[in-house]
Image (cartoon, rainbow, N blue to C red; front, top):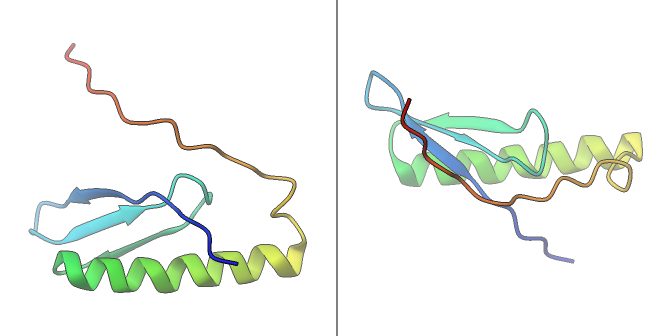
Length: 73
């Protein structure tokens, strides 16, 4: 069964990209390009799901991505 995840992408000071999956705690990856990041984050998601399945914690931890807001202070 395929599942859909969101990836929050930021660009670091060196021009590389960092991606984080809010639905999976601790699931993140990086890449020198957006294409490389997306390939790496896909692998990271698969590994996170595999670990969670082994720990049987998928049903216990259901985080729902709501959105991103910007605030100026």
